[in-house]
Image 1 (cartoon, rainbow, N blue to C red):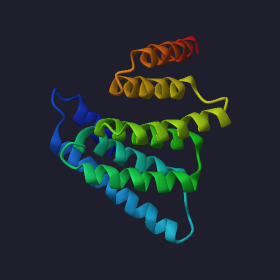
Image 2: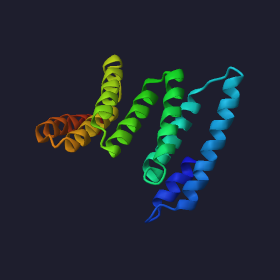
Image 3: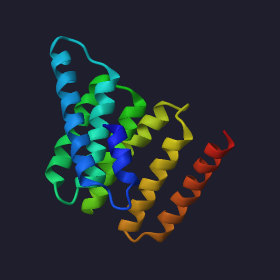
Length: 168
């Protein structure tokens, strides 16, 4: 399914047929994971699959199906909280932040970004890529609030995190 999304995105305009096929595959995979979960088996691939599906909705179907986007973001949150893998939690909260930013919902965007900051604080060895993504989300929020001072502050932090990525 991830391959189909990437293939669809390679087109000059995302191929809706490939995206719908990818959606179908993700839904089938989630169904299989949920059947296994009922048997007591839970694995990190379930969380990643939920994240991939919510990303598909967020970046390709948000405008036409915002309710499905929110539904699968919530499903991804439930899965990621159960699995409790910090990287998956950060990605999931990052997707939520993007969702709320798209809606112009400043309060919920701030709440979600604070959750990411807490995870990063609790996991100091987090890859600087995730720090950069956090600061990018804060830049988007500052833009939404028309707060140029905050935007510059987060841009400096974003730039430092990106520099650390390049050095490694």
